[in-house]
Image (cartoon, rainbow, N blue to C red; front, side, top):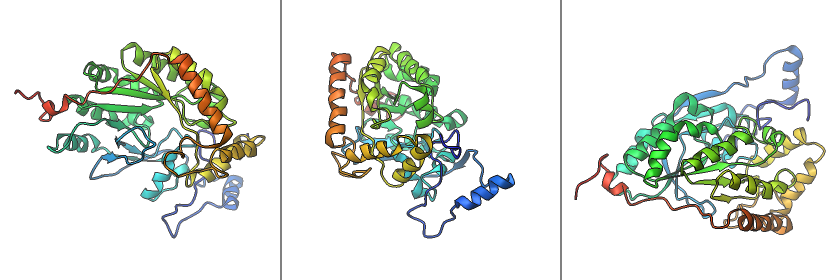
Length: 356
């Protein structure tokens, strides 16, 4: 690993923002001057910035994503997963998709109230809303602000179905609400597990929960009857794709009823961030990994076409999907993720059951 590597962060620099004409850039010679002088060029501490959106529930139009609606209590994510597709969204807020994404967390304290207004609206018909489609709703900021828990209380109050995507064990803090939601078949949890190697996990996802804790999270949720889908994503050739079968076996053994995967694609600024990251963390195989990713996307590291962008193409992508088929037959036979209940909400739109 390069001596230049910034510990505790995924991205190793800030990339330019495509929406800004004029922006300040930390040049390498300036950073080197600060290092020699013993000065701090910029703080590596996380900052929480309150924002005040007018809406919180987003319609998802992509056919490649298994959700119709999502909501994000936080923008930016301190987990620091270097491959994260959500990084590009930080540019819409005037920040970089790089270190800013991990160190400038935008906090939506009004999310529970906005959610309540949305699902109480007379024209709203219940459909699963996913926490979160963009950034992790149980990232470290949640321990400080508790917005996700308040949103779950709203979902329970109005008997509205909710999905959760996370790689943080903090989800178990809300086991009491999750159990009550599940009693009405209103919740499903997606737990992301990308490797069984702690070394890989620490490098790829520096501020996430350990693999052991994530597998335990799947087990605890499953033991309480809460359906869990494991997200074995993204599969990155040369880094974790060889682990697909043992990963599927591990999550199945801990109670997951299904799993999903994507082949990594490095869209927007993520391509530059990933290339910089891998040359610093895995210099001996950086070019090989980048070429294998390109092989999955027609010679580039990104494919934006619906239907193929998350699956990839070519021999390497085909091998990954063939292994997934084997894994499902071997470890998930007679298992399936149940549909969530959309029939109760209409009776609870006023916050209490309607009498007919």
